[in-house]
Image 1 (cartoon, helix red, strand yellow):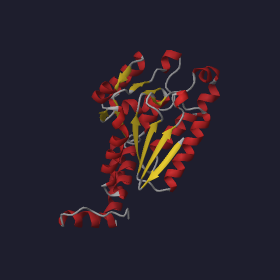
Image 2 (tube, one colour):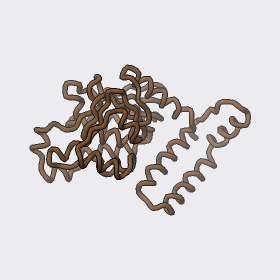
Image 3 (cartoon, helix red, strand yellow):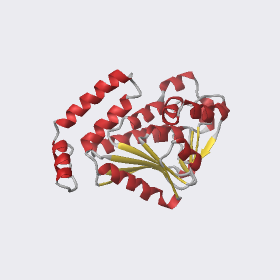
Image 4 (tube, one colour):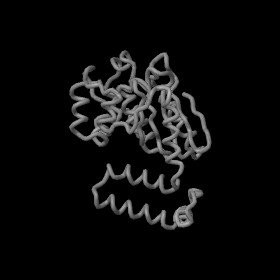
Length: 252
């Protein structure tokens, strides 16, 4: 696992190209440590990608899956990692290079934003092994692309290329492989231009929208808005707009 920090952006690279960046137990533990390091560094954006150009992140080794039992599934090791990615303080961007199958697809789904290289392939092929996606695939995919498209992918074992993923709304941009990192940082720059407190609270409200009914969500939203209304960033943002200059946000 490689983590680099630059200004308010962290880039996390799953670095197991010889294993198509598969998420084994050691890699999952390293991933959690990297997430905590990025949190301690108070970065605003976290870009997640895979080493090499063949795979973003692949699922678990088939021999390892074959050896697992009920208790392994109930331990939810990979599912807890995806939840940690989803709940991270930073805005997370999945820069999907190559195959994102099984756990790799679920990792992309757990990120806030997703872009892909032209050679990206997405899929949740677990039913072909006699199991189901177990790290959020059946829950996050329909929330992103709709129930019908999610059923089409999972229940038929479909694999989507980058163009299909873009058409389905799974990713927001497709670029040539050599431009993926630059595209991810251009997207990060758009996030960095906004008020960091507002972005963090908006992410919390958006994530909460999948967990509660509309009425409760609107109360949550109003409460978050009230916090921003008392912030220095609100005063700076509105002043900068009226003065026709870029805002200088501090996150306070």
